[in-house]
Length: 473
Image 1 (cartoon, rainbow, N blue to C red):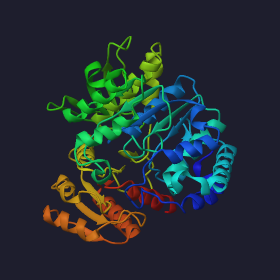
Image 2: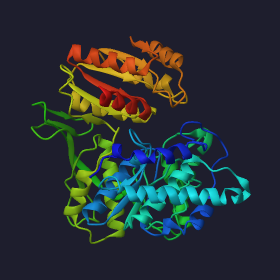
Image 3: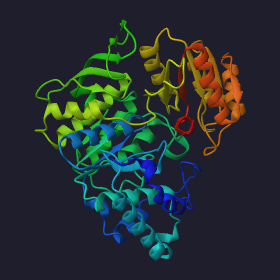
Image 4: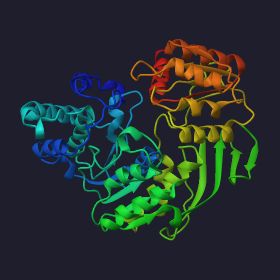
């Protein structure tokens, strides 16, 4: 399979879409509606209708659920497109098949079609509203899947759901993963309001799989949305039982049972790190025993959503194939442990995680302790200006032998002073470095010198910068 780095001819398309408002880089209110997407899709011959699809929303876990569903469909023999965000190293990570990038011709033809369509119809857009970057990327993805003749497509919502650009699809099944407070200035200031926006993807008569919810208010709103639209609810929390969660590592030789969460950390000689568990449900003919590449106990709950979604659409789907698909699923920047670090002598391990909320950082630290308990550790942290660093910083206290704070690259606005103050206020000794590349170099050197694990977290943009740095050096 050809790698993304060989698709250099996409530069013109990327430069073209970069002329349009990109919410990921420059958040702005009142830019979300669906009429533009409906208009563009209609002018392109409705590419979103050419493949059957799943639609996945949620505050946390929607990317993992999307990756797992697409991996299972691929294992079942279906040619499957998967639409996800953000990308870590290459724009086309957002638009690919479950098995990797499409052929050049697919991307080239889709880009040409979208650009021609926009140039032809841009003066007749509904109400003259300007196009957005995400709308163009979404319609580009739909066009790719149509040109590639995908059997299935899995669409991860960008933001919210009700007015998200992806919400022009008519899926066979919707999935909504865990909901928490996020993007409150755009989605609402309560979990109930946010759940209403997420629940906007639920369609009349289309089954919806609801993942485990921390907030009962969010669950009630989602169930009400489904009831109003006559959509059957598949409740992952009540239908699935997760047990015997075991973390596997090729490096260490100890076994620790965490009685509080009934999670066992079992070191084994295997190819890298993994997490196995037992997933039982009356919808399965037997319990599933996947061994996930995606780490963290919460990923077992994401796997439950993905497995139930597939079983809802394919009641006779083989448990063997579901197991294999879940086990093969991977997604960059989600507690990703880089394996090829031999050139960094002394470095115990390098962990990249784009966690940028209080709950996601909490999960990251829990998983980190399961895998690296007792190991020396160094932290490289950087987050965007709109993140709650004041409450994130204390989560790192008294765990790291070296802490470095930096900008998450130059793409996203950040407050270096705000991060510096938050870590100082939490009583965490640290070094603040404004230049990202120098911060990466310094953190790596510190971890190598101490024989420590280096954890990079706080932003997907920072994860991207680290990967770029490693590739150059």
